[in-house]
Length: 143
Ligand code: RB5
Image (cartoon, rainbow, N blue to C red; front, side, top):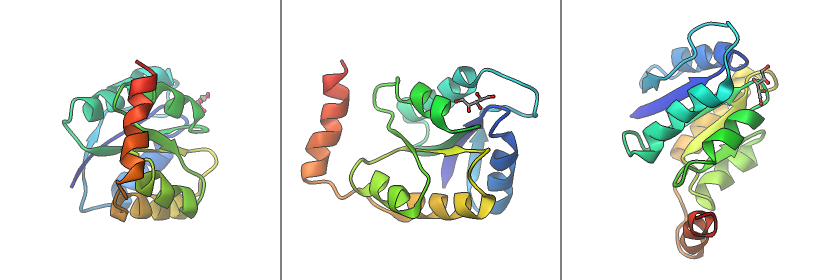
């Protein structure tokens, strides 16, 4: 499986732990590559574009809180970034919202929790049906 991953300095350490933990996943790491301060919209836009273009189906984005990363990614049509803090959200963002980016706050989510949320996110399929109509409307109403 190939995923895009990107973070600012606030998510850098968790990003590196995620890459180490998920050894079987091929990551396209769009940065950042150190704890030096960067502007999260720059790296998160690079990650969102990989999903928008179809180069990868899914990915992981991080910043300190996850909030700025999520706001940025969701400006891209076709990108559905879900900011996740619990197992329920990790499951439902796939089942009902067909999320294609999981968003995590590097300063608030412990590594073990992040790994579990990512596992759930990756293994849970989209329910489709009535949710497909709604997900299509996300892009329609914002055009
Ligand atoms: C950086 O200090 C911090 O603002 C950023 O990582 C993120 O939390 C923004 O939403």
